[in-house]
Image (tube, rainbow, N blue to C red; front, side, top):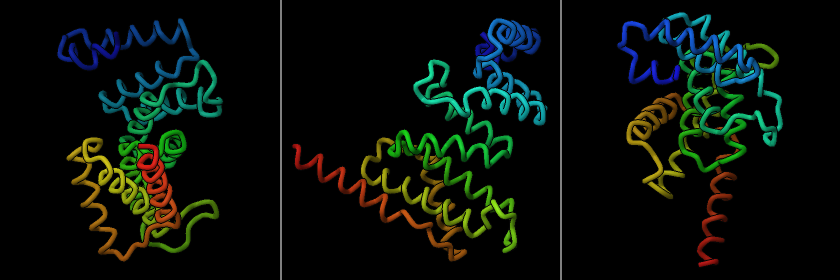
Amino acid sequence: MTELYLTDLCFEPEAEQSCETFLAQAAEMDPTDPEVYQTLASVRLSQQREEDAKTALTQGWELWRNLEPESPTFPPAASRLTCAKLFLELGVHVSALEVLHQLEGEDDENPEVWYLSGWAWWLLGESRGDKAAVGEDEESQAECWGEAKLCLQNYLTLEERDPSGTDADQMAHVKELLGKLDAAGVVASAGAAEGDAEWEDASEDEAMEE
C-alpha cells in the first residue's frame, strides 16, 4: 500500500501521512522485514531527508546482509537491486558495491548489474580524487576506475551477445563513461579477458549442444 502512495497516489493530499501510517503499522507487525525499511528509505528520500533515508536503508540491509541465500527471509534479487540503486542515489557507494558484488556472483549475465557496478566504481573513484595515498583498506582512484572499466566492458560484452537485453540509456552512459576512462588512460582491472573467455566458452558449449 505504501508503494501505491509513492507512485499512483503520490499527489493525493493525504499521501505522505498515509505512507507514514502504513510503514509504522508494517514495522510493528514485522520489524524484521527489510522491505519495510527499504520502502521507508524511499519515502525519506522523496522527502529530501537523506540522512534518515541512509539510516533506514542500512537498517534494512543489515537484516539480510549476512544471511545465506537459502534463508527464507533473504530478499529476492530484484529487491536487492533496488537496495543497491538507493545506496547509489544516496552516495553510499561502498555498500552499493557490496550488494552488487553478491548479485554479480549469482548472475554474471545481468547487464544492469554490471552497469550499476561500473557506475558505482566510477563514483567511488571520483569521490577519492587523484591522490595516491588512501587508507589501508581503500582503493585508489586508479583502482576504482580500473574496476569500473572492467564492469562496463562486461556490459558491452553482454550487449554484443544479446542487444535486446540492454537499455539504450544505459548503453549511452556506458559509452560516455568508457570514453572518459579511455581519455584518462585507465586500464581495466585484471579479469576482463578471463570473463570474456568464460562467456565465449559458454557460447561454444551452447553451439555444440545445438
